[in-house]
Image (cartoon, rainbow, N blue to C red):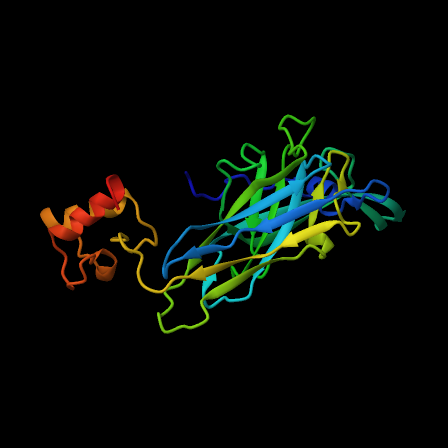
Length: 301
């Protein structure tokens, strides 16, 4: 399983299309539709990184070909959505509807491929968040990104579209119940064991229209006529240590075993996360701790 930021970036003209198809799509008024989203309750250890927070989708009647949704945290002292800053040049194209001499007094936003009279470019600094799409409903979609609207990593705005340009080449999400839509990735702070309230609530914002739309193949938002159901989730931090996290990365994997062997037998770097590997609680690193880690990874826990 890979954890990475999708490398695609919006190209000139694509943002206008995305806004038209997903973010500013009109709600369906005649057909009764339903949409349900659920954020899974998750647990982690202090200092753990890349914690997967699963978001599930039910769309029993309509196909979903694009969406955007916004989640917020209420405990920035416990966790954060990791982000990477990147400079983005946002170019928009405009068709003038009315001229006053050489000055345009009324214009409309158009796609780059359409006829346009002038363009405007803004340089923005975007904070790109981390997602895991492996094994999810959007695996293989052409465009899946997340950004922090607050600029602090305490929220995450996810935008996805199956096939942004031309005829549909990537299948959307057919009607189904409780499918894994996407996994948000979060980093947990090294909070002390003395902290009593160790739960961060993760809340969807379904009634902020510019930040919430699940679009069908006709460009209409699904479920905005009062049939949207939202089940918010949380992340609870255990007390104690993440045993086996030898390299202090926030997760336990084969790299920790290699790190410990290097330290014990070939003079590798000092193990700084001593409590994480001290299985017998004797404040020392010995062969018994190595055996414990090998048994946990490859044998009986």
